[in-house]
Image 1 (cartoon, rainbow, N blue to C red):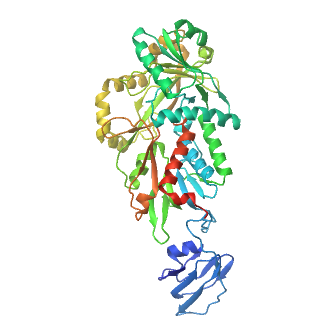
Image 2: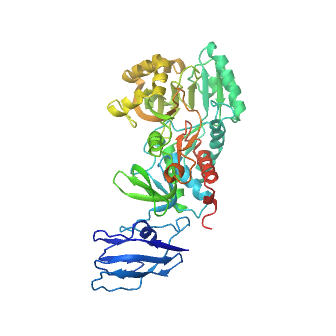
Image 3: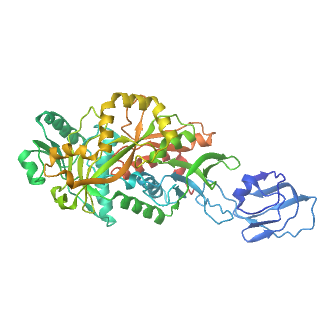
Length: 514
C-alpha cells in the first residue's frame, strides 16, 4: 500500500530524518536532506507530490517545479511501520526516541513495569523517561526499607495478595542478584490490655491473607525475640525483613537496560500530544525534547495526579504529599533493636504511628510522624510551594480528611516541631531509650492517594481517560494513579499486573513484531 504526501512550502533548513518523520512533516524548500547516506541537494524546489511504496527500501521519485540548478542522487529509504519492533527514529542528534511503549517515572514501580513489559514480549521497543538524573530519587529512595509480609491489608484485596506474593518474589530476586537483605522479623506489640482484641483481629487478618508463619506470643516470649521491648502480647512475623529499596530499583533498571530498554533521565514531562500524521503519541519535556510512542504508562508517584490530568482523566484520586520525619537512634543504643517493632494500629487514625526499623547499614530509624508537606516533593518545612498548598487545601477530599483527623494532624505537627515529644511513645516499647539517645533523622514524602470523599485509596488504581480509540492521547495513555504502601514490597507483582492490563487493553502489543 502506498503513502501519498502533499508538501507545502517552508523556510530553508537542514534536516536528517527517516521516512516516518517525512510523513509527519516532510522537508520543503531544502538546501540539503540526508537519508541512509544518500544525499539530495535541492535549492528552492516546490514538490507537487511524492509517492513511495511501503517496502523495505524504495526509490522516491519527484515532480519538481520552479527548479534552479540542482544535483539529485537516488535516495533509498526504509519505510518504518510504527507498530513493528524496528520503531527507531533518528533526529539530527542520532537519538533513538520512538517506542512501542513508553514508561514515565523512574521509581521502583516504573522500572518494575518497564522490566515486566520486556519480559512479557522481548520484541517490544520500550523506553523510560525520568525527570531526575538517576533512579529512585523520591519515594523509592526515601522509605523505611521494610520487606512487608501482608498482615495489615483487607483480605481479598489486590493490596494484600500482591504484598504476600511480593514478599516471596523480593527475597528470590535479591538472592538471585546478590542484593543484601536481612530477614530480621517483626513484632506487632500490644503494650496495654485494651489493645489485645485489635491485635487478635489483626492476627486473624494475617492468617486470612496467607502471611507466612505468623504466631501470637505472650509477654515473656516477646523478651526472647526483643529483650529490651515491653509488651503484654504480640504478633511475631518471622519473614518480615529489610533491604535498601534504592538498590533494588537500580537493579531493576539494570535488568531493563540489559533486556534492550532505553532510559532517558532529566526528562520532565510537560505535555502529551498526538502526532497526527503517523498516529503516534508525542511526549514533550519541559526542555521541549520530544519522544514518540504508540502507548504510554505513567508511574509518576508524587506527580501521578498531575500526569493524569494532562490527558483528561478525572481529578481524583488526588495525591496528597505526606512527609514522614524519622528520628535516628544513637549508635550506642542501636543494639537495643533486633528487628522491626510495630504498634497495634488504631483503625480510627489514618497512619500507623511510631515504630522501630533497623537499617541495612546498622542504624535504627524511629518513627515516622505524618504531616502534610507544603510542596509535592517537600522534604522539610522550608520546601514550600504556595500554589500547590492552596490547590490541595481547596480540594473537597483534603478538607474532609483534615476535618475528620484535625486532632491527629495537630499532634503530628507538634511532633515535627518538637521531635522529643515522640519520646514518650518510644519509651512505651523500649524504656531504655532516653532523650539524649535520639536525634533528627532523614525524611521521606509518601504519595497518599485520596478520593474526593476524603477516604484514602487502599488499592491499585489504573486509569484511562477515554475508551474512544480515535482519541490517541486519552485512549492510549494508562496511568498508575495509586500504588499505596507497601508498593516497594509489591513492586514486582504490581509491574506484572500493570502489564497484564496493558496487554488486555491493547492486544496488538502481544503480536509485535508480527
